Image 1 (cartoon, one colour):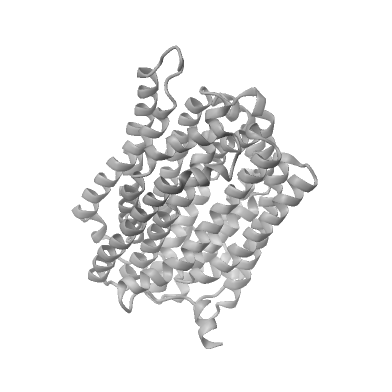
Image 2 (tube, rainbow, N blue to C red; image 1 turned 30 degrees about the horizontal axis):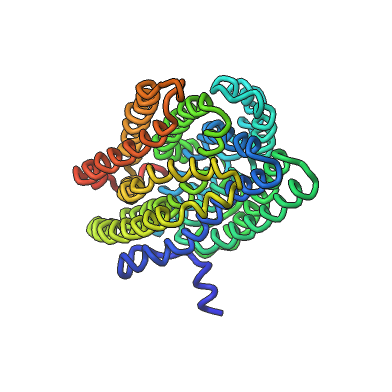
Length: 463
């Protein structure tokens, strides 16, 4: 029983062998991230199998707009993770509790704003990015349901992020597995059983995430040995709001940049027709799983760096970074090999259309080696964010997405126009992404070695 209780307790990453602490924290988070990816993947599989390839394209076309509308939660979650991990590492109960309370209050405000503006802007945004008329209504209904029910999504992501900042990745995993299982059951019931189509997939996601958000809140309430979780701690306090935004806005702006780039590229993708849109959905679903270890190690290093910076152990941060980087690159290399050998079988899960499978596999081969580069980017960016330097990763994202990926994608499409491909070759979308990944890794490595992140100190200006 004691061992089981340990799994659900906060983890102090300022002690012990760094790589062991990193792996212990990463494994449940990796499983959780895979489960999180199952949300969108199961949606795509169910839609592709029971409704058709055009419906699959509709879900894919909606995602860039969805990511853009949810950008504020990225800012809150990032700021929360940094504050929670550093205050936990410093053993500062008062500031830890008040920073968590500020996150919860700010999330409520952001959720209410999103519920109001989303129904107004969704359809015009979809029209703006050249969404085909044949899937426009499906895209609109899918997004409307997700936005009206955004409370579950926003609170689940914020609260599970707080749990991870406390070093408790296991509880977040359990709650996510419960939610994912519920989502799968509801997906099949609503779409295959009740014929609700794309709307059924969105509704299933909303319900499942609300359940997981409630579970996260209950868990935080029970952690009274390390924090206070009550209404008093959630009273608006300007200092904590400002600190959250100071730390989180660079990451929020990064997400805005990324989302705008995705919307711009999606507009290009939409000009290639429904087949390429569906291909892009399949590739991005497989890509989502391939990226999971990279994102996992990135988030792990944010928590690891945050706790150790809070404890003023910079040498330990650097040692853990070297060890974590070796692990991440090794895992990504194995994943790249698996994709190259067995990718076609993964594509077949989404569709029986042979032409679509062949097209998707061709695009996947272009991206495969980029996952190794992304391992470097995610680990080093995670360390910089955990130390409090969220501005440097923002600028790197700005450079790689706005000044590299988008111009390269459109430039390659323009240069490859032909009678067969009047809008250019669709490979331009994926080649541009690969180039951005590789150059992003190089820039991130240079920035990490310059060491601006080492100048950051324990958060101490909030009283």
